[in-house]
Image 1 (cartoon, helix red, strand yellow):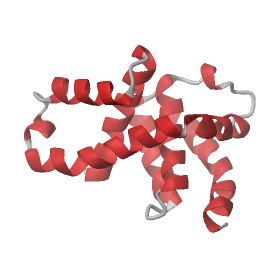
Image 2: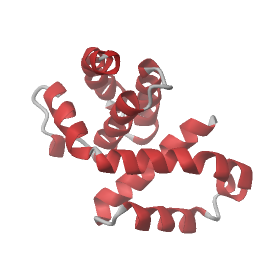
Image 3: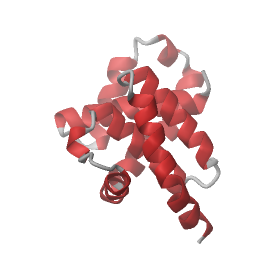
Image 4: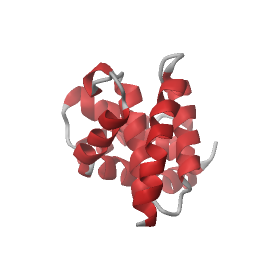
Length: 148
């Protein structure tokens, strides 16, 4: 598994925890790494050092821009209120949209494909298609913002 993919998975898990507990990012980060210290991936210090910065960038970035991201997601989601979406789906969408808007070094299509894979891995059987539909709808606006 690539380092950025692992970072996205970690960010998703931390965002899920934030949403479930209401804890701030720094508390969730500390707790995540404390609990994950027994995980094989985190026993490898090189992998931990490689994935942690990007995971934390995603977590803090989504947290800081959440209102903006949510507004765009809701606008692209016909007949879907944000609170009706699963926690996994809405946080995968937030991560992908944040990446697309604020990480110009990552091509938007890569963010979309990674989000679809995250949705398929952690969401429901329909998550991949749902996430793809919303992000595909947002892609022209994202491209306009990135070019402008």
